[in-house]
Image (cartoon, rainbow, N blue to C red):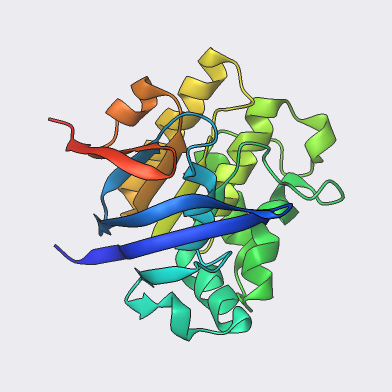
Length: 227
């Protein structure tokens, strides 16, 4: 199998006052193309920091990350942004929709920024897939939390990403709505053949993926495959 994400000897520290706080200690793992992969651990275990580094949103102190065949440390800020726009999708806990744009615009704008001519058609198609066919013109404030997260999922798949990072995608939703969002995420993922990396503290959600990496105190304490 081809590895879409390859992480080697990753370290990350932040200065907190006069102290240096190491958030990730010498971390190594890889994720294969089209795999579903969970990164689990308690709050403060380094999950979100790790996601930011893997997606090229932040730089590591040392170590290497290869994403979609490209070594991130060799890229400038702008080059990393171009790689993300082309290859990476995101779903966040707090939806991160633009409040002044309609559901359709939220999904289509990233495509328009890339110069796609059919952004609106792709946006409509994705919103229909996530069950929001009748809500194209609604603004985020007119949608429930679950509906907003559906828009966010549609937006994440709009650029046909090679890899999708979902950071606590059900964190702000009730259990029933959260289950529906996860089902949707896995369904769309299968259809699109995307690699899915989910950051979660929910062991039940982690069990749905093919492989799990467990973090504690910025270290990998366990890595296992689900059978």
